[in-house]
Image (cartoon, rainbow, N blue to C red):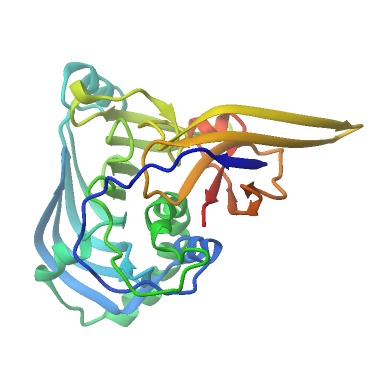
Length: 340
């Protein structure tokens, strides 16, 4: 695969205050592997009581329990694991979404007590909760019990977080310096996987990069095949919805791409009985600057050997689709390209 970048638009992201410096020599693959395998930090286990936080349409309360946060990745805390007593409230915005919620959960409004929660985020959730945190007496025991679970759950959101944090990777040909590593206000993400008392395990998403920024659902297996039931999915501002394209980590619809493909050429060589060699060349135009990583959808039966842009090699990560998503059922995976 070869790419030609036709135009480079200036970044429109607002300036952010400086935060902790990012590791200066990390590669895209190393960053992705850290995001995919991050565990709980032994020094970040706390007691938490009567604390709430909101993400647009849903409200999460942590009534009483223990919470541990993950180790730093790219200068950020990106996750937490909670055990105790909590509650989530989500009110769908209209009759259609409430009817959908009722069909799957038996109630038009999602109001569920939960006993465990795994949170993954790219924002300041840790700082938001910090005033309510107190040192846990059994912190080491908590980490030992739940670290492997948190480690395994980290895989699901690694590619989405790579899109956010790839902008902090070292720039090719420039000296590595410590700088601003704040995420734009236009890129906010929170995924909560909750173990409900009545509904079992289910997921909530808040993602400003998607056209439908709020969605909730549940993975289930029918005759050995995984399906993700979307209980509700809606935009925060329906009047401002943009054209939908498939560009999010799960393969569902999302906002318009930061780039457009103006032309492409595909050269194919068939080598019977089972081999197919393909070279694809794309001419792309940048519509919105600042983004370092792009996602492409590709059949899981195809393996990328090399990617170049203007004759220079690019890092790429070929990632298996999440079980039960539309992308997985189409038999496709995602490929992330990281520009220098």
